[in-house]
Image (cartoon, rainbow, N blue to C red; front, side, top):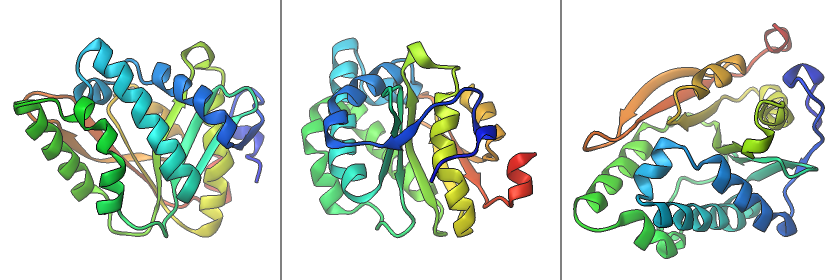
Length: 216
């Protein structure tokens, strides 16, 4: 389903991610999240940060969103949006086992391990119980930011979610992203402060929109 033109300033052709796109899109997302506060909290240190993000996005895209979710990009591979549908089960032991290759980068040692574990538990507890679409990742290559890529990616899925009468949910740790998501009718419903003076994570919820509300 194509998004309508009001969702983005420039025309970007959006399509589903294919297996052969993954390697390039992983690098796009690594660049897109290079300055993300929560990414630096999870993967501390320059080498660990880049290596951890690369492994994380590769695992997420190949094993999670291509297999059991929805992954969208543009024909130019300028960004990616990764969604979990409402009928997908909450993370369980199988999902945790898929993250085993990340543990050395993600958990670190000593206090870092406990802080990361507590934050992940807080994030999972905060996620609404109501059926919803979950936007796990939205990222644009820095060279293509502010050209409408993210809006086009959202515009491919949000109208369909609205037609289904379902809400959407996401978390962001960049305060400047709040205004962008607010333009797409997400509102902040809560905050999570990472342990030990870590960054804030804003929780955002979007009720289903009527066609007139989407155009306003």
